[in-house]
Image 1 (cartoon, rainbow, N blue to C red):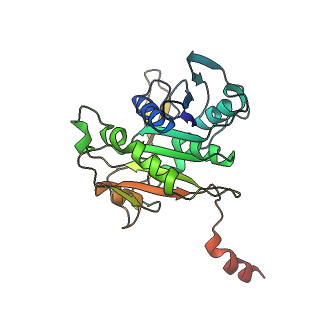
Image 2: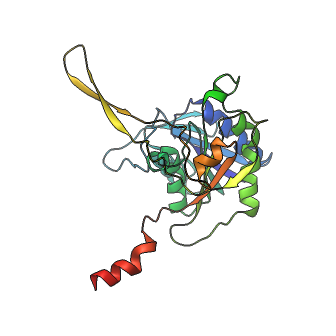
Image 3: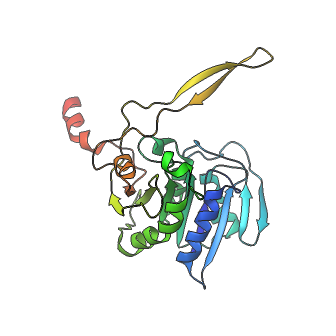
Length: 261
């Protein structure tokens, strides 16, 4: 199996090393793992592509490249430059340092990389490690992802749905903020919503007297509704969420058509 991996934390991020091990396990001794990751951290860029300016790409080692772009850029660079059109069998994005559950999913470059792969017609999975008080004292805060990642990916490859239509399925995995030994298993979960957590800005004045605004997030350990991703993670479970890039609110189409008739 040929696997392309990327992330949004950057080419030197510890989570990418974890993902390299997961991908190598899945690919097997005869397989190939190719890395195209951002040269610098790209957290929060979502599904951004560098449409208005070029990006530099550099070979860092065998099958290992860094690109000055977003995770979606890296997937495109991998498909059409690094692999020269030789398509991978699977794209993995992560392992993100921090959760990409609930509303975080909408901002995540990790998700953006997997989404771009899906739009290109390739099976794709995003992986993130939820962090918290119970991971702070671990020798390896990615312990749950490192120990359980290959098993979850393999389960999805063997038993998950992989459709071939427009806006095809891809998957979002979040490992819980506990050790591997404390991880209780997997739960299929919908994307949750933290009702009291929002992004905002915090102003600061620089030594030169200029005002700068820092983007500031909210609490990450507020539970979401039962059956959703954060609720599962905070209960010690790995959440598995099927996703599509189609943003249409299908549930109100018929009602809206009737209202506007």
